[in-house]
Amino acid sequence: MSVLENSPFREVAERGSIRESDVAQLRQALDEDGLVSIQDAEQLIALNAACPIQGLAWCEVFQEAITDFIFRQAQP
Image (cartoon, rainbow, N blue to C red):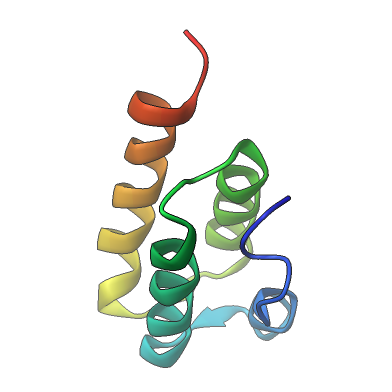
C-alpha cells in the first residue's frame, strides 16, 4: 500500500504544478511511514512528469525519496 494513496496528489497532477504546501504534505506522508515503496516511487515519478511547474523544495524531496527507494528499499 502506498503512503501517498490518501494524499491529494491526483489533484496536484491535474493542476500541473507542485506548490510548496504540496511538498510539505508529501514530506509529511513519506516521513510518517519512513519507507518509500515501489508504488510511492512510481507515483512520485508520474507526479514529477505531470507537473512542469514545481516549487523549489520539490526537487530535494523528489531526489531524497527516489534515492531512498533505490538504495534502501528496492530489491537488488
